[in-house]
Image 1 (cartoon, rainbow, N blue to C red):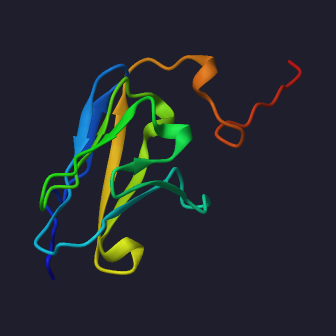
Image 2: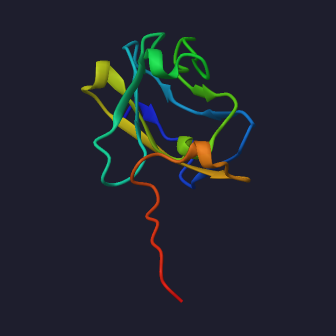
Image 3: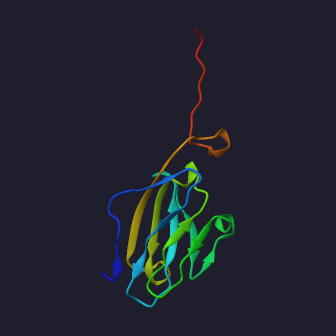
Length: 123
């Protein structure tokens, strides 16, 4: 397989920090990145061939050097945790998945719908 998996262990990042998710290929072909927050999440398209989806363009940057399509996330937040997939050939080829774990204090503004279930109990 031409797509090289650099990390097999989960990658870790700290809230507010920067992390680079590696993706290297020997093919001269477009590489797409996708993100899945949880197993129930259908996933989101992040970027392709230097174009980053608008929702992510402020904090995400894509390396577009020959063979290096690494994705950098700046100002990491807890919702950035999840599985990132780098896929060759405009999303049709080999893929490499990276689990990103985010550590640090969490603020209430970072929660997404479905992340937390609140309940009250009379005592």
